Amino acid sequence: MTGAGVASAGMPADHLLLDLFQMPVVEPYAISEPLSTAGRINLNTQIVPFTFINRETGIHALLKSEKLIAIRDSQAGVYKINDYTTPTQSNIRFPINIPETLKGFQARFASGDIFRSASEISEIYIVPIDAGNPNATYANMATYWSTNDTTNGRRLTGDNSKERIYATLYPRLTTKSNTFTIHARVQTLKKVPGTAANVWTEGRDQVTGEFRGSQTIERYIDPNNPDIPDYADTSTSDPISQFYKTRVISSKQFTP
View 1 (cartoon, rainbow, N blue to C red):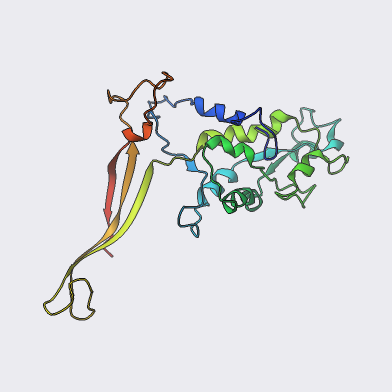
View 2 (view 1 turned 180 degrees about the horizontal axis):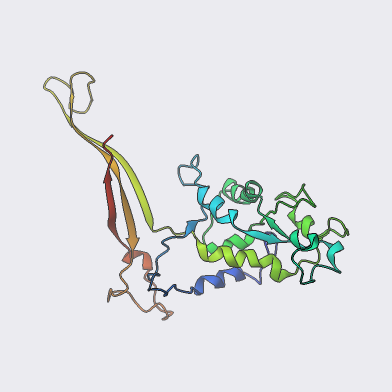
């Protein structure tokens, strides 16, 4: 997982193997539920078909706490010194330039594509706020890593260091949200005699009741459902989506 523009080992992309593995959280109690993505942030920040809505707040929160390792060529003789109080050690971990990083998301959506797997985060460059190279942008990240320059070059950064940030981001991402909050304003209406049955006549027809509030709905799969086939059997063709159910886990009324 080394960022955009890196060829994978054939098709499908090799990073999709990550979807076969999930480490459940079982301490201090069994927090993880089977097939649940609760608590994860959706990579698809643009909502289809309402493409004018961008839910980027979660991605901002996710990237805010991350640091990207980038080692300049000129630090060859000092970056491994075990003294983290020196300036040479304090400037190899950089905060993320979130607006620039999100340009990778926006370019994907603008092309008509979406994220289908959380592992596709590894196809997006993570752009640092690097004082040594303040002009680092999403468009020039390939050059950022490969420049042969003792001042601006970052060729000392190993693949393990470049990929570390994807390893910490991936477990907290999803493309299949299963918890949704629906906000609603509902009215019951009464028609008065003498007006068209299919037309609301303002000033004559009556609003007899109103509800404003929200409900949080969870989509889930019961792992004990005996109808779920053995998906390890290659002859199984039934999509698991048909076994999803929904339940209301919270309901609130807005009464200002």
